[in-house]
Length: 345
Image (cartoon, rainbow, N blue to C red; front, side, top):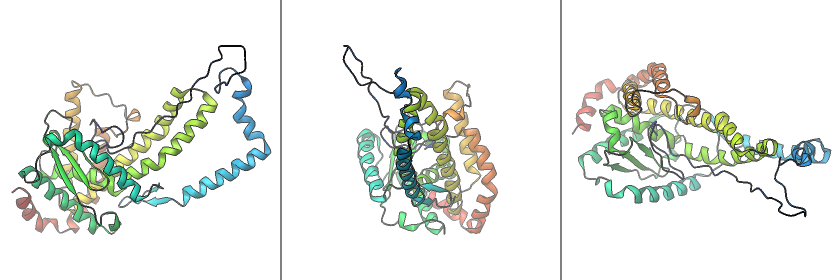
């Protein structure tokens, strides 16, 4: 989803700077205190050296090392047999969550978001709803034409467009697993035109095409396991969370956001939308961020789940030659005027 956009807590995330992301639950280990003189359970690293060294002792024990090696080997085999290639970008990623489970979670999330926004959703017959649906379906059709896309991920999906008419809401847009599309009217001034709307929708569509929801869900147990391992060493949840967020969760999130930017740009170009407009969208987003922060924007990208708008502008500029090449190969120059007149109706 877009940057600086409020996401649905619990799972979804869309916004043009933030996309559906499942909320990872933190494992809480309860401290147990001894109020008497009898024996009691002690948490790790509470002053008992034997507890502090338990993990080290486990590594030094020969029989334990054998089981740890088997566990590590089994986990490695599971990991490498569940590597998958992302469409368009061709990035390798770890996904074990099945497509049916992904769709089930998407449907559950949709029901929750629908309850929150249904009063503000424009009817399907509204001119704005029709316009946005036409733009989005053109993006879907372009994805079918991309040879790197697994069309089975798109087959059978009933796409539903929901325009949330709430000018006071944060600029936002997202696509849920299963084809439910939400776009808030507050983001339309940043989009400015059809090509800008296509930039936002293609980005959100790319998140689902690349199965970023399933990727996030697949990584959640790994993060939890690493958190437990770190806890045996540090005994501090705060430090563990800082390490996991700073070195794993947030960089992974920024990587997926960048991938969605790239995939979305290539697909919108294939759909005959002007690729250079994507740069203008992020320039307007950067200006919007300055306005809501009263002109003071501190670029602390390493603390964010999304790349800075300036970074995205740099990336779009770097990718623009390839996007223009796809645009020209799609015979957009001859069809451009027709599509512009059609979608402006």
